[in-house]
Length: 180
Image (cartoon, helix red, strand yellow):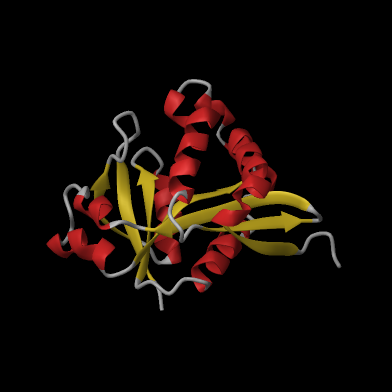
């Protein structure tokens, strides 16, 4: 096998004890600079959010490796109805019903710096989405990251409103992507 081949592996919440250290290590590396000044982005707070994200039974994670080294991952879970009622400034009032008719929430997607710009994130994302049966996927993008938002738009996501899921979190653009 070539060393530069992306290998993708899928995990469920039952695997979390096995993969949690991997997820935390990648997070700590990717967000080190921001976490140094923003407690919301600390590894400890991410670990709390990770526990919350995996508490439902439908959590799925795809981890990408190249040459046996973890280069990134994406994970998510089925969105709840109440989350969609928290959408602010909806583009369409029907947005508030998205949780009742099937939306997969992409909670995290990240790739280590040396592997960015090589379509790794897109490969991990597409593998995760390929496994989903919901009508759409959703994600949150920090208003302060227009380049990231533009990337998701190139992938087919579109903005449907705003959300601030935690009192100390940034305000995010809510974006959706049609599945199926």
